[in-house]
Structures are given as C-alpha cells and as structure tokens.
Length: 88
Image (tube, rainbow, N blue to C red):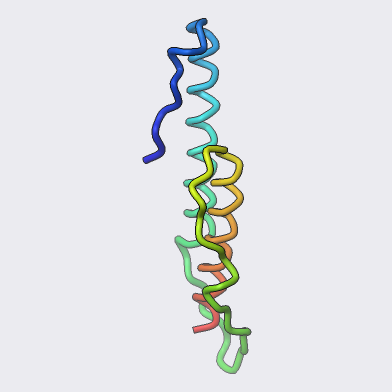
C-alpha cells in the first residue's frame, strides 16, 4: 500500500479531501490497468510466434516520491508481463 502524504500540512479540509480523492482515483486507475492487462490470458493459434522478452526491459523501480513515476513504471511492468505471457 502506498503511504498517505502529510495532508495535515496543507491546511484546508477541502484541499485535503480533494487530494485524497485524487490519490484514490489514481490508485484505482492503476488497479484497473493491472486487471485489464493481466486478468485474462488469450490463447494464441497454434504455430503463432511471439518474440521473447527479457527482464531487462523494465528497470528496477527507484522509489521516487512522485506518483507519476510509479504510474509510468507500473504501466511498463504490466505491459512487459502481459507480453511475456504470450511468448511462453
């Protein structure tokens, strides 16, 4: 689970609520991305060839504090995992 930012430093309750809502919306979007790409495995026709994918195409997550960096990295990882399930 992603830790909550220090909302108490922002002042207004409305600002805190809006930021919390935005954050929860972004987490939901990431969950939907994972579900959409990894919940169903398609059966490829016999004889289909997919290129193999190496594990080096997705770099290690550096632990950035920016949520956008996490989104970008997770999207890259999900697409990589989706691709590898078709190349096995």
